[in-house]
Length: 335
Ligand code: 13P
Image (tube, rainbow, N blue to C red; front, side, top):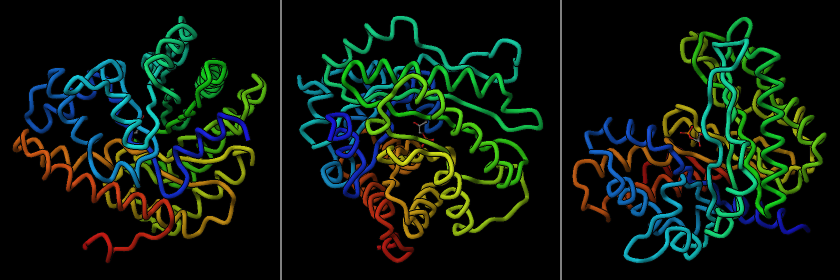
């Protein structure tokens, strides 16, 4: 077993998943202002530290994705990556520098951040990071994602992955197809399949060790403006079909993004996927909003109510952990 494979398993095996707390300062500001909390570095740290020091970290969270600001912060003179490691989780770092307008297909985006990445990875390794994240983002419309978006983003994800492994870390490969649009789940299946297939073609071409990679995909869902009603069973069936057909068997696991689903939807769908999963892939979570939303809303009412906020986060983390083992139910959700 390679060292990278061991790290990947530590992050997502045994009922654990990833807390995606890597919102850029711009995105975190939107989240905080959305609940009427001032976005300054102290408040961002205070909320995040509340999550990182929660009781559920040990059993439920195998990895935390951090943003550049947070990985360099301290809380009560303790370094944040150290706090995360002490809670039994692996510190990770978002290393892309965001999605920019794609030349010759201006409605679409290409993720940037490759220049200087080798040196930045060395610094992040020294700070304690053992895995990294890079998000490619795609839209669905008649002509999108275009071949240009599919091939340029796959190439960037592969170049990033090769550099991350060279630095001794596990790359999270995140091709996110947005839920926006009126497309059906069948279209989402076809487009997501094409995107994931191309990502692995590029990863293989660049000799990335697939045993040391975690895929972070979207689930297969109808667009948010579609009037198609779809059951959790159908979502799980289509999602599993997409992954079985397009992810090489060497990949140890998959950690879904929540992508705008509610906390309950993201939990229930992950649970159904695991109840139906007959493959060897671990199917876990790498949730941002679906782990933090209720906790953030509660915290915004009283920034000093750490215990109450943690109680809400602990419940969510427990529910996601159960779902990653196919052991969640509406009954346990209510208890
Ligand atoms: P969401 O679960 O809120 O989609 O965030 C996950 C993430 O890291 C997106 O890049």
